[in-house]
Length: 549
Ligand code: GLN
Image (cartoon, rainbow, N blue to C red; front, side):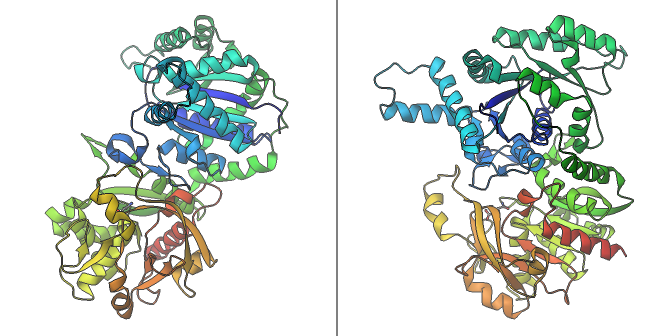
């Protein structure tokens, strides 16, 4: 433990999506492996108070923290790389900051002062950053400022960072992650956009200590010299970050560049030598991410991944990572194919194509579009004994399909899709009724960590090997208790329930009926970590491998 908390700001230049999140996570990991206690903060400059009200196609996955905060997908990267559990103090948006400044003003906490955008907004930002550090008892706080320098939106956050540096120059460092394009026709890597980005950052009173240069390939000496000279950065602190096949190589590449030593120098930190044991584990994992001799083919059925002519799998980032970890550990390379559920509605013959896959996943979702397609895919998976894993909405689909086709309740549905159905097998939760009536949608679902009790002799219990589990949730609807007895009488097993027995957390078919047919009301993907894959995903992948055999 250091006596003094150190703050490392990570900002982006030239393009968005340059990899600040992965850079912050990787930097955090190399410092953690030198015995430092690290925590992370993500700053998103939009007005939304949290990410929960945004369409995943706009913004990517909504990552849910254990305390129920609905955040940016980068928070998932931090938790996975650093094996941490973060809370709402680690996440900040413009909306969140303004909201609390306005609330404080209403409570007379500014004691009659004129409350102004500057300095009160940056002051609030600084207070939150320091609080996150002290709650985590951190040596290092990594702070990623979303967006790109030069954008109007993140100026007040840069202003906060500048003030922190002024207050304590030895304890604050700046890293810029920038992009160096190589235009095809020119054939030469260009440094000018990065030079401009650094100048723009200088305009906010900030000089980067380290520049991480993202590009197709490593920088040559000439490019490094140019950046060093024109951006005012010692040449040793211009670090190449070429494209890689696996993001999990990045911490290893950074360590090869001695990045942790450079940061410790800048911040005057006396850290331990890198923990070789920890690195060995990470290296083995990273190696697996390239190895997988055999493949396992997973169909992902959903709707949040089409944007124009592109497929954006970001909406399900944690699901993808969870599949990878559980595949790597079984020495398999997962190949994931994105199938649009509405295609099964337009062309039911397409269902037959599902035979090509070793397993099927239906992840979380909202609203009625594509639901009938989902239900036909679940029926196909059940009847053809293809391993099926349903996450949240995907679990509710199991219950609806079973009610329709096994219990014979032809109009069975979720209230979310058809409120006038006679057989509402998935009903709105009691606690949600008032919320929906008042249209108070923001941050009001059943969110975050809740306990569930597992039933002996089930697939779920066999996977977890423990009786009580804690998993993260994000939903408004639940299995209607009125139908539970009928569903169980016909063979569906509710193998996980809330401690009071009221809420169905896991539904499955016994192994004698189906190799793997299981759904969870919670989102197990949020707890999958590189070095500790999630037991249910591991069980699912195992079933997929067996089907292949
Ligand atoms: N729409 C469903 C509900 O609100 C499922 C939510 C989800 O998949 N996260 O209950």
